[in-house]
Image: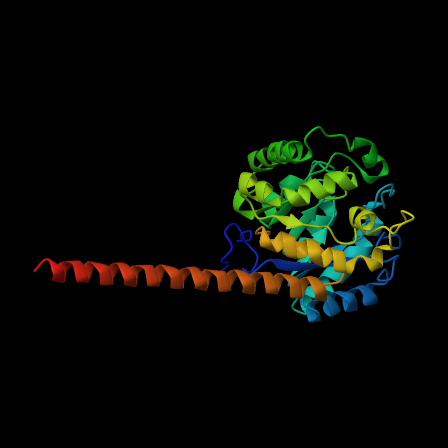
Length: 314
């Protein structure tokens, strides 16, 4: 069981004793982070197994790029990319999430053994998604979303980004629950990089504790290799490092997320983040042991003082 308050995951998935690590398997030719390295199904399955060997607790399989400006892939192609990979990974004993905005893909992936549906639109892109998830009774990630990738950057306008993301997520969660999804199976994601500037993303990372506290649901943080990290790491000329050179920065956000009680972090390279969340948990547990020792010592001192007082009164 988790010892960090709010860490418990959704019903239907294993309980890890710390922030979980979700490894990303992009079965796409145009991912911003890996440029289609795992587009072949066999390579994608091997990649998923390698991520698990490296410390991932579950893997998230997607067949459609959601990078800024990306065009949508057609339904048949997405099914062709995703379902065989999900089936093979499940057969190997992996806990698998499917990353899709389409109800048909989610339904086919769940039939193939996927244990979680991760929809970056929170069910807004496809009206059939929420009924499918409700019927399947699988955990469902609801991300903050303002529109498709092709034009989402134009929607990155906020007065108070943390407050507005909270309000919009709560509105969406209410709608999803009203449509029949078990609230015990929900996970929330603030949607870093989706209709957000670098400043917005940093404010949301700084506000993770508030997000978790006010939404009171398991929190997924997906910061891996994103543009705001590139902005932070940019050199004197303002050029950000390539996406694949942002893994150390990703691990830093993973540690921050774990410290604030996130249920899971979603990352492309798992080893550094897997190490980071384990260190955070170990430090937390050491602190709890220290607190318990202090309480026991205070009780001992109080007991000794009480006994001395009783003797003095005889």
